[in-house]
Image (tube, rainbow, N blue to C red; front, side, top):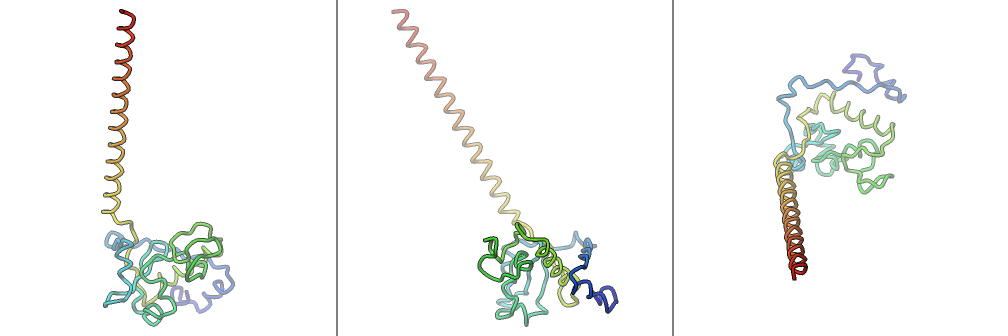
Length: 187
């Protein structure tokens, strides 16, 4: 904040816990921003020469310049290769938090206002840091979504066909009963 606002006192509201979160600028080059799937993010863990990426609230950052902190064995390595938004707010690094949810999860469900504020503080750090860069947005795998949707449509079509076949069988049974009744009446 001091660099961002060119004001050496800009950190005082943060220290007092009364700051307003900075507004994250809509990326000017949003159309050029990458869309990164969870599987791609998982691969960006620093192994075999890959960069170190992490995600917070669906925004992906390259933190390779902070390898001391984010590489294997570093204090924040647990956050690399995933969206661990919940952990940024709760401070929990493994296992489950006070609500029983996985600490290293992107879920914000059940977090307090103070925990949400802490997530925003971390987001501000990554957004304004001179060494960490915004890479893009975390998205669901579009191919996986399409395959899942086609699978659901096929299941629905099969269920409809089965229901229609059952209705036809019921109609045939009713016709047979009606014929039997007519034959009994005629006899």
